[in-house]
Amino acid sequence: MSTTDDIKAQVCALCPRDCRVWRGAGEEGYCQTGNGLYIASICLHRGEEPPVSGETGICNVFFAHCNLQCIYCQNYQISRNESPSREFRMNLSDVINSIEDVLNQGARGVGFVSPSHCVPAMREIISELKARDRDQTFVFNTSAYDRVNTIKELEDEISLYLPDLKYQDRRLAEEYSGASDYPSVARAVLKEIFRQKGSDLTFNPDGTIRSGMIIRHLVLPGAFENSQKCLRFIAEELSPDIHISLMAQYHPTPRVSSHPLLGRTILREEYDAVLDEMRRLGFHRGWVQELDSCHSYLPDFDQTGVFGDE
Picture 1: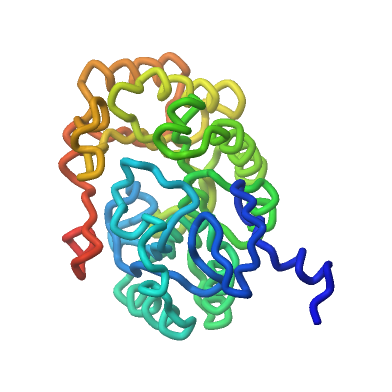
Picture 2: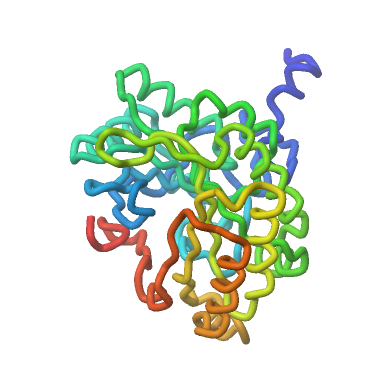
């Protein structure tokens, strides 16, 4: 019989949703996934920032479902929590074999995409890869809607953090992602990642990143002031020396095609306002997408090559 302490140790408090369900007993919280490996895709991807992908690409492991439900999510085919999670269930052996198949094509790193609700599964994968002498760059590609304690536990396991900073506007965070606390949660998470990694990146001999942090921000239509606030937080409370990946790739998905703002791509004047603020704040490291990138980076998880070029 389980003791009260045993049960407390097994209830899910991985992320800020704090569902407190017992996933090991088949209960499902906000993310509607259990304790196993729920993986939607393992694929070679060349669309990340140049020193992340390198010339040969990165092996991205896309977890199914998400602890955020952004109404505009480009990965909506796999991120919606209403889809049956059993469709994505895999065993560890198959996962590792699939990752190694991609690594054998030359991929230098392993990226875990939307791992916040599946951190124990991710750590299990990392442990098994290390047991097979795979000395990879392990990348934590997160929305930053995480618990700080979870990030602290990953300090010795994650090489490169790729956190988003989506919002510093509580209203937008609630309306678009169902998480009004996102701004404060993400600030705390980014501060912890910065404590671990600082502003500088370290590199492998082939020019790919070995360790560090890169903060991504996707500019949304009609929300350039939110973007400016995000940049101000990074510059003023972290450092303008941090590597920033500013993205213009927003493209409406079917769910938001009729939305008054999200139903269009961003405008030149909106993007210019964000770029002007970026320069004013003194950011000098990172990558800036071209405005026409809205026609690229459109995944299709119903095809073998998710991004069309693998």
